[in-house]
Image 1 (cartoon, rainbow, N blue to C red):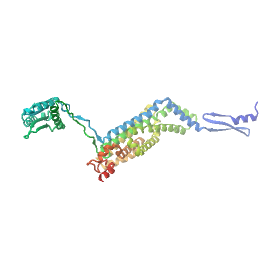
Image 2 (spheres, rainbow, N blue to C red):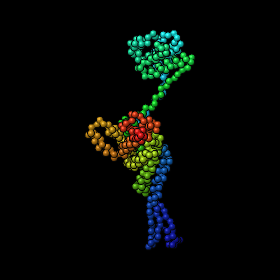
Image 3 (spheres, rainbow, N blue to C red):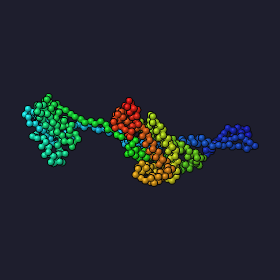
Length: 451
């Protein structure tokens, strides 16, 4: 048997939790037991985040895909841009000036009428034979060439070099190297053959090799190259919406799964407010989105560090801000799309397809058309108006923003994209004018040259 004081003590110290509502037994007022209750909203919110953590731990492959696939697509984007716009210099492989390896089996001739020069003539014939040249001794080189040229096709393809050995009226040795000027490398090859024959005749052996290794050819530059600029626009408009569109589509999987399995209904019936349910889900998904965006900066450092870091690091910050804002706007769109589908794979595929259509299809088409100059002003204005309407879709705005950002970034960093030795050679070139894309990089160097 307990008296009223025992009951009052028990009521002040005990509490219980019913359906997510914390119930505490309060004081006895007027002979009645007063119950006080309040919701533990903080615990419920933390529980929602812990739920998402355990879901990601169980389905770790989804989390890895959310981080890895956008990273790979961004790597492909940056590599494609690097391959298309960094060709400011063209390098040629060294070419060994060997007649047989360049032109194959060919015809030739040699001339020598003086018996005292027969040794040199034999050396010339041996050199020609070693180069797979079918050498013929002639009595008059000019007549031989004219007769050979009657078959113009054979003349252009078969005869490359020839040689004449004689002495001038003063008795000096006169060596004449004949070459077919229709073949680009025939002149140095003819000189090589003659010098090799002279060397072998003098020292009874030896050889001379000749390699053509041209200097790099510097191009006009990116900023005035319309083709390169259009490539940057299209590449950014294609890959950026695909990379982040895949990430946005993955955020439909959990809402569809919980709605299809009635897990969402049980949570709401247990006292979880709908606002808290969606807020916790958005917070977790946005955290994953931000981590994936930070990972997507890695390709910048690999393929275009000069354009996104150092003095141009503001471009990296702008890119991150653009991706963060995209996540802030696209994740709610994914939640709205999740209400339409009952299977996760259908919702995922539909969102990816929509991002491809609105971001890649419409974005790249509009950008390509606006970048060309052969459309009328009316069509251009209509495209600009349509662009404003399409900006309601985050994926379209993302593609447009990335294309503009990349064009500005690569244009501003053109001086850093050129190696110092190439920049010095370009600035000292007599062909450097104010029309060149690298002129702004050479202003200080040009002033030094003038003084």
